[in-house]
Amino acid sequence: MKCQITTKELSRYLDGELGRGDRSQIERHLASCPECGRILAELKRAWDLLELLPRAAPAPYLATRVLAKAAKPAGFLADGWFRRLVFPVTTAMVMAAGLWLGSLAGRNGETAASGQAEETAVLSYIDHLDDMPSASLSYAYFNTTAQE
Amino acid sequence: MDDAQLMQRVREGDEAAFRLIVETHQRQILNLCYRFVANQQDAEEVAQDVFIHLFRSAKTYQPTAKLSTYLYRIAVNLSLNRIRDRKRKRMFSLEAMKSERHRELPHPDGSPDRILEKSELAAQVRKVLDGLPESQRTAVVLKRFEGMSYEEIAGVMHCSVSAVESLLHRAKIGLKKKLKPLVS
Image (cartoon, rainbow over all chains, first blue to last red; front, side):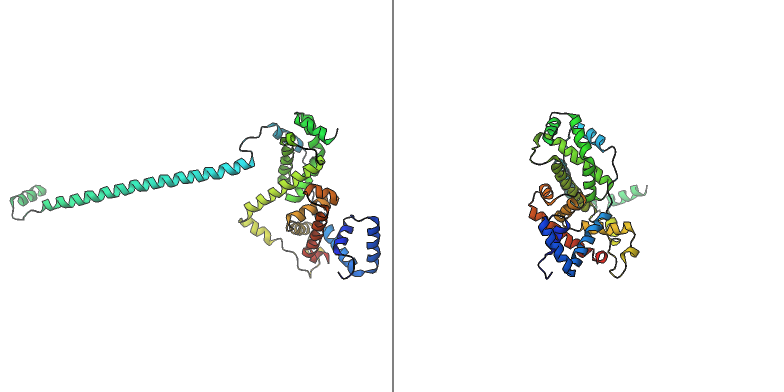
């Protein structure tokens, strides 16, 4: 704005927050300044558009509901801060417990795997005892019993 | 009976005194909450919480301001909290993205009266109001819808009168700019 009236003063004028003297001064200026008149009209139009926003419908039982709720003691879980604290902590504890149990299960798996390896090694030694010369009596005996 | 006496009786467990406070202020508080949250159910829930908060803080209540100012302050804070919670929940929802698409302002070339029905126009205005910074929006709601003076708004918002003046000035400039297709 190029004149001495600022948009801030126009805003105060629109809000009815100016004293009688200041208001008269603005009105005299507006009568001779189309630019300020245009700005004021746009500010007013934008301000008036807010009137389009609907109002709340009446809530006839609001007071009754408030009184019923007020009669109940405030529980721990009803408090926002408590709820905000308990839920994350509980979740973190459950996750930590899950990880711990998972690591335990993993360790048992490792033990089982190493036991199996040892057993395989021992069996491979025993297999050496199985080698029998094909012309031996034991070879003939085992072949005969296997066929039976 | 003045506000301090009423609250003294609430502190002593007088249900009738509390009922009187609720019945006296419920309409204004419900409307104020609705202006912020723009949803009947949310507004009713927040308004309920405002009075519950008052009831539970009766023991520590200090009559430094009018009871209505105190109630307005709680209502503004709880309404803004509700909006923040809702935004957090909806941030990544598909529904939010879809509804945003419907809220674009009409092209400035078209006549707003022809392009938009009243309810659609109201939705555009709502979007622009919601897009203002919280402090500006609060000042606008208290001035435009509650008809409060700068001094009363300063009392609710815990700030100076000149700060309220600046907030409302910037808010009007912002509204004018964002509603340009509809105001020029």
